[in-house]
Image 1 (tube, rainbow, N blue to C red):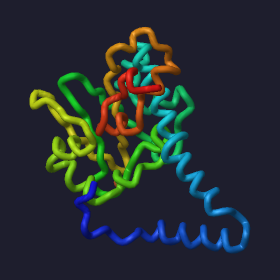
Image 2: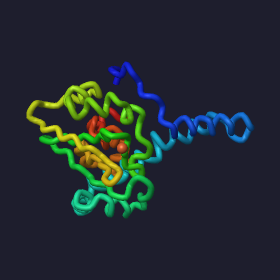
Image 3: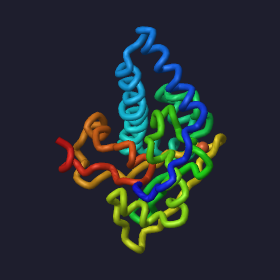
Length: 203
Ligand code: FE
């Protein structure tokens, strides 16, 4: 997302968090890299792993899949994934003919219990503004080229409803266990800007 020539000023909360962090570091109470590690864990591990577990389970269990699509919040809560920013989660199913993509045009609403903290690009003005106007072009920049016959639906999250995408189960995964399948489910595939990984691409 390089088309952003006028980055927005940092929100107050971000500035306050940085001020608190530097105070704690200055007083020797914490190390700065400990904070970075925590944030990174939330962004890249804890959150998306929860979502990946939900997706992998839905891939192997048709009844769970139906429940997940019917009442996302409830089906996700079966795993114990509840809490802040997850009061109502709606799960959208991608198919060969339909690509669902999630955004929050207003700010950065995101389903924390399953995906953790949103990545920086999700919060960027460029993504929020462009994905609703030219979703195919944006997806292409993410490396996802869609056939013209594939319908693209963009879903605007808000403080009441947050969306998570159920990506398609990749071909060639018939014999794989749920744990193995989890490794194929990237964060981006659950936002809808990527496909789940093909088993050939996972080492
Ligand atoms: Fe928002």
